[in-house]
View 1 (spheres, one colour):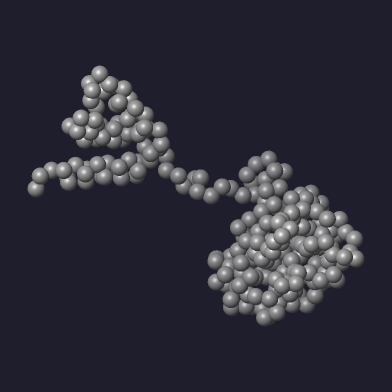
View 2 (cartoon, rainbow, N blue to C red):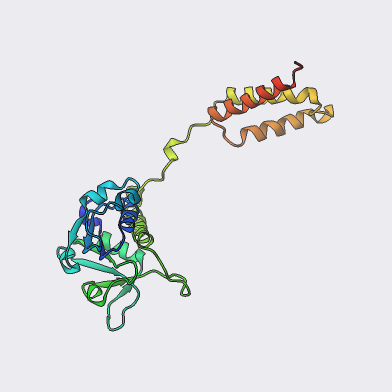
Length: 249
């Protein structure tokens, strides 16, 4: 995807290295890699950021530092300020979904700015933005940490991208390709026969008039989950162990 479709994430005067690292992790989860830092309180680089990033090192390594918010967004045509409504600031208010749509559909670089952990963005920071980006949350507890705010915006950007592309080109579901295929029928038949071998002497299939129906129910139960060959092998191992334990010493 072209860089113009990826927003720049700008952290304004972030206070803790751990939060910068967690924000980087949230970004990379959804394919965003360009982070800009405005006057980080503890300087940069920050040794606490790396461990908190949990492997999102590419984001931290490429992060750029600026003295002011204006300098950080100077090359961006569209700036979105994540904040609550500011008194005295009259700007359009949009949600994270609409911000994601604008990033994908309006040409030019987009920056999404996030304020310090304690106080949020100052009025002069918000004044640089084209709009205010906010999300509806519990009015009695409106506290989001920095990484949570970043991941909400990044997720909506990725989701809208998939929607526009009408395909899974932005993100793919993890683990789907890792699933093992179902076990072949002969392995399932062996598992079923093993169960019948153990259950028959115990009288499980009595009365005889219902034996066929009971066997069909057992077969349906054992074939329904779609066991893979490792799972079938595990079940067979359990049955073999039980079989050995029942034999006299």
